[in-house]
Length: 498
Image 1 (cartoon, rainbow, N blue to C red):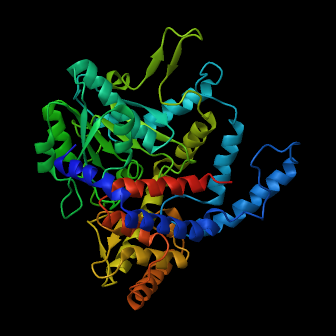
Image 2 (image 1 turned 45 degrees about the horizontal axis):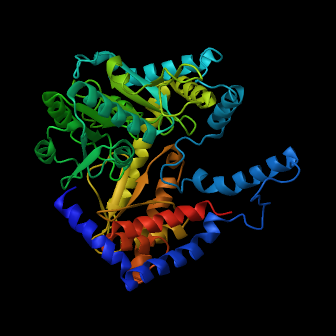
Image 3 (image 1 turned 30 degrees about the vertical axis):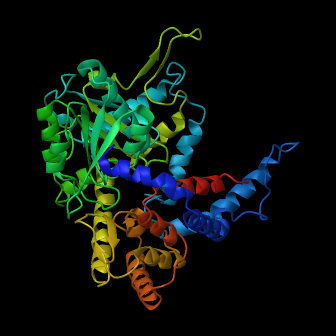
């Protein structure tokens, strides 16, 4: 814990007990609960509710009727391109194709590879195809002395891929280096899943600053490396700002120190290789760099698979072995699992495999080309608004802020116009990830026009405070992180309320 963190921790406890702080938090939560009730719980009174099992099972036809009605009510917003990320392909034919594949494999479980060998085929080929896309054929050398082939596993999403990679480095460092108090070094912009990994697996996460370009500060990383450092982290690109960290320099620093380096390419893994082939400025970030020892890549984002799959890759099967779990003394038999889950939905792996094979290289090239062209149009639109500025120099994922307006109120004004943007924190900003949905005719122009109108609205009413804007403002103004954390936990409680 740094000196600053210790001070904040000491301040938090008495601060939470101050009546006006507690009152402010309660007031914001009550306001937020009332305001969000309609959007978070829109089906109260419209559809049957089940706080407990019905005495007799419902008619399947009625169940399907209700689910189809909810689907119809929800899909319009994302289908028309009003959402940042979330749905990355969205074409009806593609979705129907994946749904058919899922139905064919709805009972399969990779845990029972002898019963469903197709699941093993799908997952092995998903890993191999992803590795080949990310420089496996050009990879050379064994940075950690555990092999040079690029291998990996299929996971449930980017968070699990990151968790597994960090757990792998922890166990490798414990066995090979005797490190009992492991540390990883990650830029402040690296995904929150690295903090989650630290929390779950007892790893200290040292966050280092980024420069004015929003990229990791290599000098700060170098100074932070110590005897307990087990891995460095870089993003390609970062979630908040869509910029690529200096992976070349960071991975080489890791290689020289004999530690791991993880490229988080959850967002960019299925875009950057094709953007590079299309001539866009993409710096090296994958296994072509000898210091890169692991990567996380989301197939369910720009790989256009159904939600629930990702890939974690390693340089060397010896390193991947530290990810696996085995139990040899259990009365229930020999137990082994490559990832966190035991039983897993083989249908998702089948659908992922089908998505990749059906698209092929040309499909990904064409999709990336459309996204990049749309991103240039939207970037020009943002840059034309004098009150806004883009953070860093992104390719297709934009974080933007304002030096003169409350950017959270701009985001709230956009929500009135049906746009669902992501709020950024430290510095304050809004985030839009361009997907194939946004490449539909007119969507980019609509976004620019609505953003101009939202900025004009906030300029005319600078004192207005609505929606989530006060919550972000509270998080930025209060040193008490636990206060805001408690608020977010209560928000999650609301999600589970029947």
